[in-house]
Every structure is written in structure tokens, then in C-alpha cells.
Length: 566
Image (cartoon, rainbow, N blue to C red; front, side):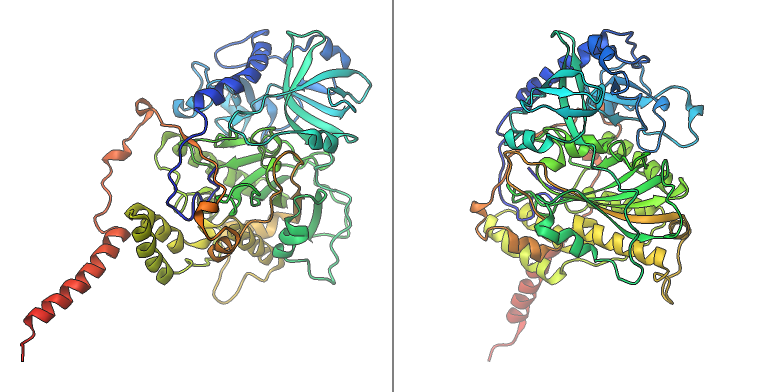
């Protein structure tokens, strides 16, 4: 499985372990139950307008089980602004290229009345499940969930994807017991009593602590580096929130329903040497009445043209889906870190989310291709922030000199110019667009400098966007989300630089742990413009690196031939 950076040290030729057909068959086993519920009510080509009936389960506790759109926001937006459907819907006002990736998946799309929101709404949010159950407890046998008011509901788990090398096990069940849970999934009415088929399980204690004491103004807050690296990255540490800056420490916090802008950093995987760089993305949403954050929106950029072995689809999706899906959830294979800016106005979060939606639309159309060095999860996300006027400090490339040497070495060793060009691209890319942790720490430190008033220097005048950040941010909170115990090896904190990456992986690439993935070709009939017709520039870095030594050698030979002999 390639991480945000992909295969930094190139040369491996991958072959898929399983076909995409096999993976889809197993996923469809879950979808059948979910979509069976959908079809029992009044279905239209646009979506679903009524809550999903849950037979006797509905009578058990209406306040604890409900339609996925009836409980909460979808990020910044009201649930009434959306309706449920699948990617197979007809006459949906959604780009066909986007729907193609979600053919049998439960998605939320905007309702037709565009006047319900003054801000452009996400054209597609990947929910994957039609029902939400909250305030539930997992019983000792891990076969039932008990609702807050007493009733028990049989519980089953969505099947493990065949290509997913690890999954929920006894340690997972033990972790989830003795605490309130929120679950996404679907009620299976083919069984009596109705069984809840869970696809995501979110501990309800994973929320902002609104009663946390304010940070001591007399003490400097710990650096982001310290917070990330604490307890070896915190994979097995408790969930933790820490206020690192607060505007008003003397007044009561009134953060409920306030917009947030978050920076998401996922750690290194413990069983994949391509994923030590981690992952990065932008989060928006609203603070829940008790600090809830499960319904925030994660903007997850990822390679569209591969079949993820865990079932990941690049998309806008709720945070509980992104982190806690039993197959694709990031929290099942590494720790994660979230830096949250709590805002007094919506304008900053709305601008960022609107910009992300535009990029997703272009991404699904294949107006540009995901590139592990030039347009990866970090680069696309950081470009969104910079495009809005956040002048994030640049860190520069790793080393042009090292890149030139690496190009010749790798190209010769692998006997492949493409391999040489890939390593050259990595080493010459701006590091805040390449490395997730570099982007996270750089943006986080700059955010603190802006609100503390230390960002303005003789060499920097704040932009309007940065002024809005300075004016609107009420608090900045660091959140550490641990790795959920399972059969997977523990992850760690992600690497910061290329040198860190080199130090962490085995020196012999044959000893690397690599997860093969299958390709997912995009249908040519859906392309609105042909990338194949775009002619690359003649003087590419590879061409220049080839011409340079040839020119030197040719010049030397020419000089030698013209030199008079004694």
C-alpha cells in the first residue's frame, strides 16, 4: 500500500494480491443489507427523503438509533441540506465521474433547493452506511450492543476485505467494552430480531474536552514535535486533547456549534515501509454540544487510480468514517494527530471547504493526476491553504545536489530512467508540499505565530486570510487519536524528512514490507479532456540530466580531437 508519499525508493514492480472484483464482492455483502433497508422505503433516483424504518429496533430507542442524516451536521452543513442515495442514482446533480467511484456506496448529496445554504455544499459526501446508533455499550460476548435505556440489539461486523491484511479481533472488542459507543452501519431486517451490521465504531469519549483547564500563560506550550513524539507517537496511549492556545481564559467557553478548521496528520504504519511518511488532510466542521467531533468532514486526497487494499476511496467523508471504518479507518493502522482551530465565525472554514470541493471536482474528472511527489495528499491540501492567502513558510527542497546524484545512481542500478526521475522529483520538491508531518508542523507553528502576534515582521505583512485567522480563532487544540488495537502491528509517529525516512526503512529494499495494490483504470468515456494529448515539455529534468553529462563528455572529446598533437 502506498502512503501519501508513495514508494520513495523506487524499483519494485507490484502485482496485485487480489482482484478488485473479489474485494468488491465481499464489500457488497455488507452493502446488500444496507441497501435492502434503503429499498424498503420510498426510494427515488435522487435519494431518500424519510428515515429508515428499523422494525422492532426503532421501537427500542428512537433517541439512540436513527437515519444517518437525522442526528447531526455533515461537517459545516445542516443535515436538511442533504439526502441519501448511492452512486447508482439517476438524474443526480453530481458529476458522473465522481459517482463512478461510489456505484454501490451510500452517499449524501445536496438536495435540489440551493437556497437552503448560502455556501456551496459538498457535491458528494461518502457515508457508506445509512444508520447511526449512539450511546451503545458492547456486551461481554461482543455479539450484542446495549442501548442507553436497556434494550439489546444483535451485532455483526462488516466482512473483512480480502486484501486487508489485518482486522478487528479480541483485543479490539476488549478495547471497545465498558465505554459508550457510536456506530455507523445498517439494520439487517432479514434477521429476527433485526441485527445491526456495524461498519464503523467510534468511542464517544473521542471528543474535545470543553472543561479542560486553560493553558498556563506563564508556561510555553510544548512544541508540536514533542506532542507528536510523546510516548513513541502515542499509538497505544490514551486519547488526549490539549489546549495549546486560548484567546480568553477568564470567560466561560461557548464553543458549541462554532466552526472549526483542522489539520489532520496520520502517523507511520507498522507493517508497510511505504507508509512511514504518514498522511495529511484538512478538516472542517462544528463543535458538538459536548465537544463531539465525529461528524466533522475530512477532505481525504488519495490516489484514484489504485484499488486500496483497505477499501479507501478518495473523498469528503465524516471523521468517524475516515478514522474508524473497520477496514479503511486510519485508526486501525496508525496513531493520528489533529490540530483544531476553533473559530468565532464561519468564513475561514467555509472558504477552505469550498476550495477543497472545487479540487475534488477537478480530481474526479481527472483534470490532473495524483502524483506522489508533485500532487500528493500534502501538496493538494497545502495548495488549498496557500490559494486562500495563507502564506505558509517554505522549507525548500531536500537537496538538488543529492537529487542529481540519486538520479544517476538509481537509474543505473535499476536500469530505469523513470526510477531515477521519481527519486529526483522527491528530493527537489518543496518539503511542505511533500511530507505530511513537515506540512503539519509548519502550518501549526505558523498558526500559533499568527494568533500570538509574532508572525508579523519587517519581512511579512499578514494577508487578509491571515488577518481573519488572527481575528477569528478562539482557541487551538491538539488532539491525539490512538491506534485501535487489532491484529495489525502498532504504528508510530511519521517521519519529518527524507533523511528520517532513510533511517527508518531497511537498507536493503528486498527486506521492505510492501503491500501490493491493483490498478483502477478510469473509463475513457468519462474523460472530459484527454491527458494523453498534453505534450510534455521537451526539457524535462530527466532530459536535462541526460544532456548535461553527454554535453560534458562530447565537449571533452571535441576539445581533445582539436588539440594539436606534439
